[in-house]
Length: 85
Image 1: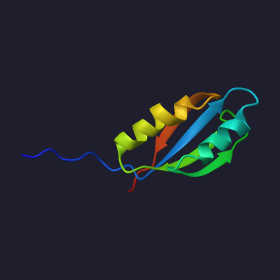
Image 2 (image 1 turned 180 degrees about the horizontal axis):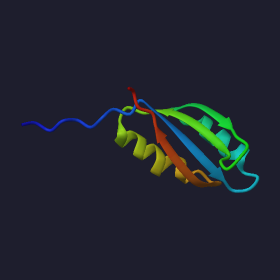
Image 3 (image 1 turned 60 degrees about the horizontal axis):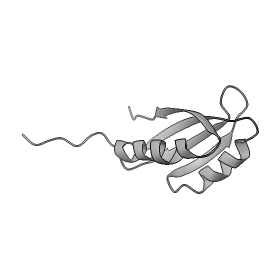
Image 4 (image 1 turned 45 degrees about the vertical axis):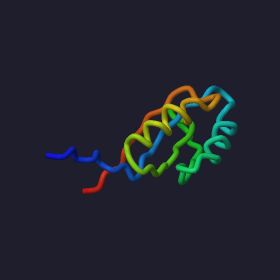
């Protein structure tokens, strides 16, 4: 038996909390990331909502750990992976 590839991650939504007064700076940094499809500023518990599209779960992990969480001003992230029914 061969190894089955992992499930494809087409779309994920990432909620971000930023350091106070750093929302715009983080928003602009997110705009430069190719996988980011759209970004929205929010009122409430989270400061930004980002929709991303990645080829697979490994690409999503890399995007989160090595790119998004490294942006100066990002304090916390929460990732919601969209699924098809």
